[in-house]
Length: 119
Length: 116
Image (cartoon, rainbow over all chains, first blue to last red; front, top):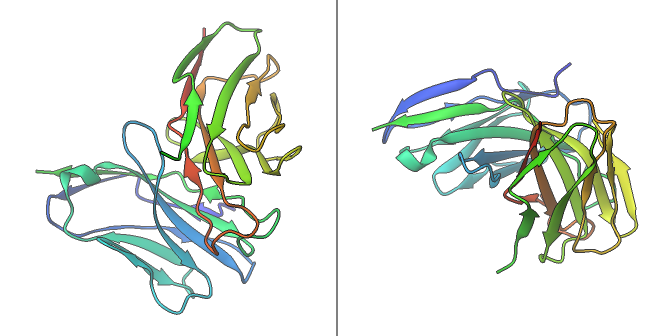
């Protein structure tokens, strides 16, 4: 079974609109972390936001927020007021087990969603 | 400026040749990683290292080798045993043990390898 599933291969969104990128995950570990990364056409991966499985509140970082629904095992990324510079690939990733422990740093990535912002 | 450098940006190799991709970081991170990215796919982990002189296989280690002789450096060798080496290779690092709880990975700009 896929550990991380991103069902939207591509999305087109009008500039200034909000957009939600879907991510579902599968793990039996009670302790895990979920990450979102942005990959512009240059290729470099840029960290956007993190949600821990024990975090009580949904994570927010500027225009990025994470809609974390633990029971549904989903961690959707919401980008508010989209901008042309948001056009990129977006990847959801999961780390199982607690962070900062030896051997628990591996990330499993989804296949990504290509977001295109239309002017 | 702290960061991760990868060289070269583009690399061409003839079939049957080994090639080494460089990855250097000056972030004082303990952990380093190598990923492979193919079109339409996410990143897949090749090798990772939590400390100097120690490394572990990831999900797709066959045909690859690494070394970790210095904290700053984690070179990846793509050997002739790798059946389909044409891909985009990304190196990453994180604080590792003792880092922040979410310990995000920081990525280099990548190397695009093409086998001719």
